[in-house]
Image (cartoon, rainbow, N blue to C red; front, side, top):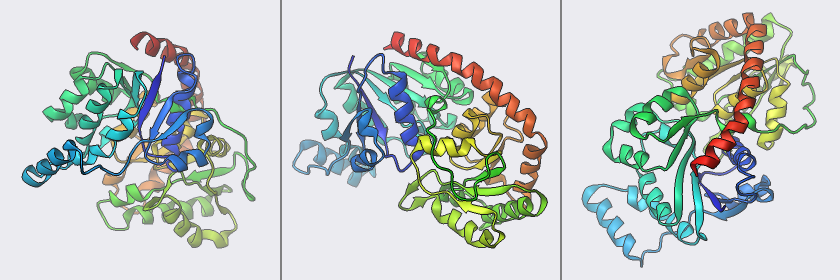
Length: 387
């Protein structure tokens, strides 16, 4: 069976990389070398994805001589509809695919944002090439489904695998062929790597922050003030060292930028280290050696969850709330919404719950991962049956 993965942004977002790697493993009994359409071919090859999938450039310059360009141009100029024009950059790569049985839309976060209408055009291109389309490991903001154009696009997927219960309930109302299973990255293997100098196994607090969540704060600088208060509290009131761990290093959206700022603020303590970039499997290994983890990137927190590391999510969307709710029965105390941060001690107060309940949360995660491992076989069987 021939499969293609699409809607992949590139491996400098190690969450995107994790989804590809885990998905390739989950479907290897169906296709041992699926095609990956990516926006960043060289980036994915650098991180070694070409060893497990056939990496193809998924976007190209738009051919202005094609009829489709004229139609899209008129849509943009006359109706202020730029979605079709945006989608045209993906058309050539899809048309150049061999005939495929199943196409997996693997951009799990893509329907968490307001600007998603270009995907309906991309999906229509893919429907002409692939027999079945699967929305894979997805979260969807429920209010987006109130838009008829988006809901119609969702309705036409042959199968949907939602990764958390909030999205599942919303998607099920639109598409009856919806199931719920953990994010594929829960099944990602970790790969040992030399730990950085100063990294004390199981005596580290892992810290991740992203420019994305900073941009969503309601009060200027309130999030960074919270992180600074948190680091000060940890260094003054515990023996833990702190590991600053990036998970996305794209230009303009690079976790290392705010993390470097924190490093400069606290480097004189001698107890804070900056973790360098690694692939997602190695980053997962490093995260697994932390005592606790506070993170903004979804797949950094999934790496922590899946290794039994008590985790606090600085979240902003349905995916954080839904994943935490499915793990713990509630998102309360496990997700701190960036939009709700108003006081400089909000993050410290949330951390105190994590610290106090460390062992209990660790046990909860171990039990849940034992259950999730049982789902891994179900994941393969269910998807094989659907496609």
